[in-house]
Length: 152
Image 1 (cartoon, rainbow, N blue to C red):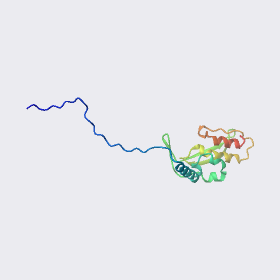
Image 2: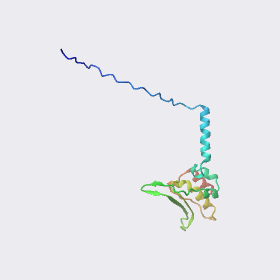
Image 3: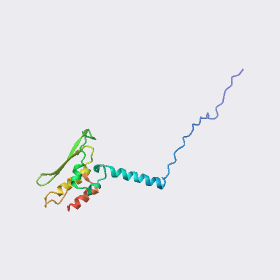
Image 4: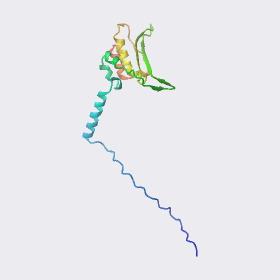
């Protein structure tokens, strides 16, 4: 008796896997969007001052800004170093005296502490102070607004 040989002139049939019903990603209804916006506004209002946008610091008084500076030991990685606490100094270019200083937790961006530093310098009796020079870490529109409010 001759053995039976199957010819393969077509690819073998594949088992079909059941498809997962995909969630339809569509625009939220107006009510859902309003609720979401309210939650986001609530979250923003309950954040500490230094976790909000920098614009929020413009209206805050210097006493409140200095009282709420984070001093907790959170850290951030900066190249190969761990930064726990950092400081910012405001000094006079001609006399090289330190006019203001502020020490804060390492996880905070330098731009977030510029407005308290500027407000502290503004309270000093320095009639000849006309310019502010900062590096790129302080390049934010609210900081320019604060310098403009100081008349510099």
